[in-house]
Amino acid sequence: MAPYISAKRKGIHITNLTRTARFLSEACDLVFDAASRRKQFLIVGTKNKAADSVARAAIRARCHYVNKKWLGGILTNWSTTETRLQKFRDLRMEQKTGRLNRLPKGDAARLKRQLTHLQTYLGGIKYMTGLPDIVIIVDQQEEYTALRECMTLGIPTICLIDTNCDPDLADISIPTNDDAIASIRLILNKLVFAICEGRSSYIRNP
Amino acid sequence: MAATVTASTLSSAASLSIRIKPRLSIPKPIKSFLYSKSPQFLSLSSHPTTITRAQSSDIDTSFFDNVNPEDDIVFDPPSPPEDFVPPPSFDEGPIETEEEIAAAYEELYGPAFSGESVLGNDVYVMDSKVKKTTGFGSKGKKEKIRDGFEERVVQVRRVTKVVKGGKQLHFRAIVVVGNKQGQVGVGVGKAKEVIAAVLKSAVNARRNIVAVPMTKYSTFPHRSEGDYGAAKVMLRPAWYCDCWRLVIAGGAVRIVLEMAGVENALGKQIGSKNALNNARATVVAVLKMRQFRDVARERGIPMEELWK
Image (cartoon, rainbow over all chains, first blue to last red; front, side, top):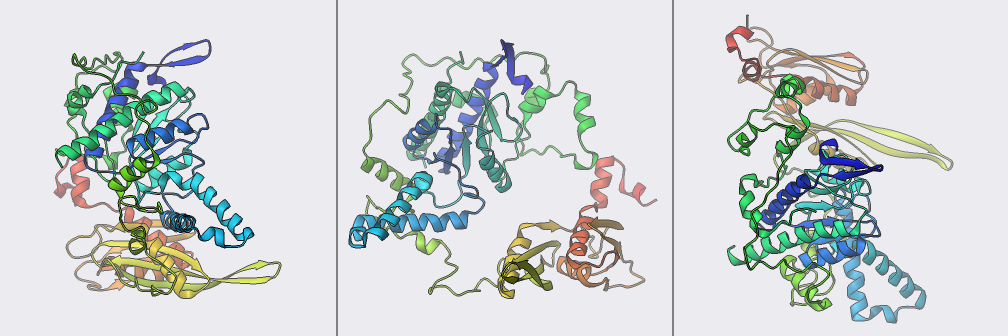
């Protein structure tokens, strides 16, 4: 990480922002290209500070997201994740048709608890039909399992990296401060804007 | 403060545009440029047998020929046009109702697993796409031979785990998968039934497939040894005069070589006779082999020198 740090003041590393800007523009290029080719994105961010903004950014960009804990094997064990998603969908259908009210209280309570459980963990990926094409990870240290899964499957990743992370793991790593909500929101803003632009450019000329 | 990245940079940085391949193999120009101290460091650190040739399909990196790594990068994107208004962040902007969000998602991805369909598509559309392994509608083992790979079982063993209640029995199957054109894979799988174990091991084998270097007479380029655990395997090509059109090898080694499509070879298991380890050792031995053409190209000498 030494090339990306410009100075060290009072024990705090200051990232070199020209390099960050360069990486960010590359990432936006990649994301724009991918969106204009109709690729699927996944945004992963489980820090409780960033969870809310990740969800909103993903909804704005119409991407899949993982907000709460990243369950191990979401991507590598995709067949099992699909089983869970099917169960989620069946529970939703039952709730909508009102079958849950006709069951005895104990069963209904159990199913409702399962539904909320699945909603928190899989709510963001309920529209995902297959493996995503690009994954955006907010904090590399926190999301190490997610990064490892993407590497084994060969999925390109964009990662927001702090000074204690390894920049060689992800395909494009953007050195930022991942503890500050403002910096995460700035980067997510740019990426989301690039995704939206890419999608609209696809709509204009497919 | 970071320079604002605007939409115009997206077009200006077209020289850095990255083509998306399923396995993203960007040669990472920026990182090596920042890390390397001198050009000699790069050539010393590269492993001699894995020099990748720059192909014309790669990104054009002649941009980095004159740069000095000690320089500070100056990032000056083109300034935004006069009437450019930065878009609202994802928090501000119009608040969308749940219905609008669901409609937008459904337009992009179809109803998938959401359980509701705003645009009137079939909610159970994913059932036909997801393979059901159990249940009435599917047969148990319909995926016998798919995508051109032939399977052969090397060994099926019954293994036991002793627990407080008694012995738990499982079956462990070792399967070698290959098309006869130079691709093999060895896989292991355990299950409570023999057939399930064989299926699992076939899936595992298809995940680790290896390419066998072969000459046009379907034999190896040269001798090689490989070991895995306590198993050591020696592989030798065959010449036209002796043992032609024969694979002289025992057990696991023979099955691996046959599945690879090698027709003339000698193989010997030196060391342990364990089937799985010998199969893996043959794969290791095969990975060590190089084609004459590649070695001549890397060393920069004509091929005739190699046969002296």
